Image (tube, rainbow over all chains, first blue to last red; front, top):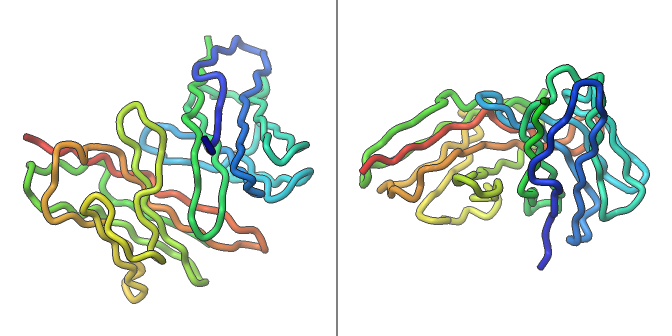
Length: 111
Length: 111
């Protein structure tokens, strides 16, 4: 089954803690993206990577970091510098012109 | 700059009534437009692409370059159409291809 797998489904973070969200794809897509979804604000782009070992900041990159060491994997770290991390995080890969394939998301909550 | 506007946060219609979800965009190049849908407890999935000019689940969307719109339409709404709908614009900015999403419209189809 081809697709994108995000884990964990739910994640709880304590104040001052870094947490890493996993995103793995077996679609052989070059481009991968991380979005944050908040009620009433739609999807906002955090980081994206068009090729292995390369990535760019999106519109709301502050407090986040990523790596792209393998084509299949694009993990997102939410650092303690992110002041309002509670949100739903979506990972996607892209094959033009067919559009995005999304993962099922990770819900992060600060406790 | 790329921009997508979905003016309605919530649209409520009765079953059997026509539906139109509005989407306007701003982009200086040749746009690639998409509609994505998110049903309750399911992942975001592609509904329509403007390049394919297809009808999915009874929905259609026509790209109107003069009005810079890509409205989503269905002649007779069904209860199972209740979901969150996002319009997305794909385009190149500074040599990088990415999507911009609208803030979404929640469609509620009432029995």
